[in-house]
Image 1 (cartoon, rainbow, N blue to C red):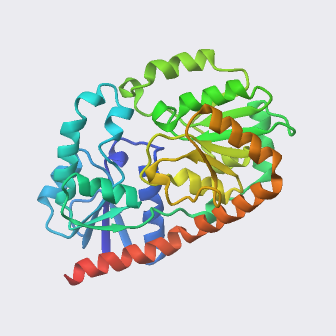
Image 2 (cartoon, rainbow, N blue to C red):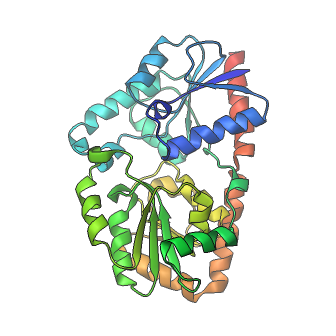
Length: 333
């Protein structure tokens, strides 16, 4: 079997985003299973698997003769939250996405929320819910890397560091993160991630202002090449996101033995509050959750063990076997 992964992220040379993490992880996992994988090829494959939503992807899908699989990483609600002026074109974007997704022979949604949102767009294609998965062996706590990056960032061994990984934007909860930082000056905070959209980002002005006016106990690291070092430098992962179709960073953080506080958005409903993590809706609740985790090490450990077990269940080595089964089913017709 030969699979062609198609993604505009590769054309744009994007080095971060959840979509990039997803398709690169899938490519490696497929190759480990003996599947021949190409990226953005014109012909010479059996299945096309699309991991982007732009006009080049649509053009490719419309001309495709082989079975088409599309992973629904994106839902229309993200347009107004992410891009400058996006609120004015969100309705049109929803129609466009619906048209694209309806051209797929099979859609893979990374969460029940993503599937239901796609259905509400009027999409009739078959949809299977399956995690994007992560290479869990890539994410583990490294004390050596923790010490090195902490020294570089100016954190001491005794500092308690709350961190987040993601696009620095209000869509990911950056503004909430900053307010929590102000409320807990005795702690250190780090946000890992770069703005890959430039001035197109809705929060570009806020981000540029924040770079010059952030609280003293907050470090905006920008892009960090060694993501294992970034997670290892943290003591708690706080993810106050506004919308997610899965939230792979939570799985990554879990594998690095971090307790998690996140938002009560539908896309993270697979995380059970009180079993895998704590959840919050506003600054007060996040401040309270951070304090509770620090003061209750026994319960914090229980949450960490449970969410790490959940992350391992979504290991890409298990996910990829299901994906291959779906490819084979399509090829059998």
